[in-house]
Image 1 (cartoon, rainbow, N blue to C red):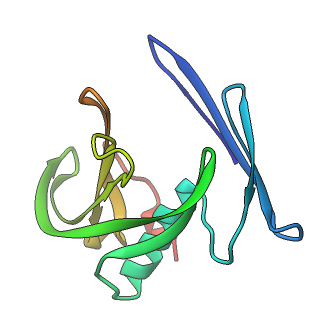
Image 2 (image 1 turned 180 degrees about the vertical axis):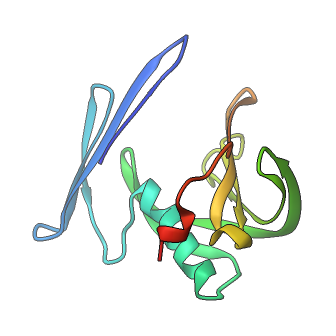
Length: 150
């Protein structure tokens, strides 16, 4: 799964290819590469958020622990349920459930995600903070065809 990000200061490219027959993943970030041993249930970063949404749609509102293949290792992470918050968005005020993820090896690197129950738990805000308090935020600004999603 390729992921590309660019900005004024640097460009990044990250990719993780899973080979379940060999129980390994090939991970690449920029020019660095790694071969990771997979365990059953290992997720990539995007799939971890989709699994959280699926769990919420099934009524499982709690901390979510998962194995994540990221960069050069496979390790456990937890999305911690922080409670309900109402966010003011371009779609209006939305009731959300907030989850946070703290990197156990680097507490200055953390993420938070707010999912809206009225929008089938779609994330409506995601914040990611790197060391030095460099934060990237993504907010929902519009939504089309949610009625078509099952």
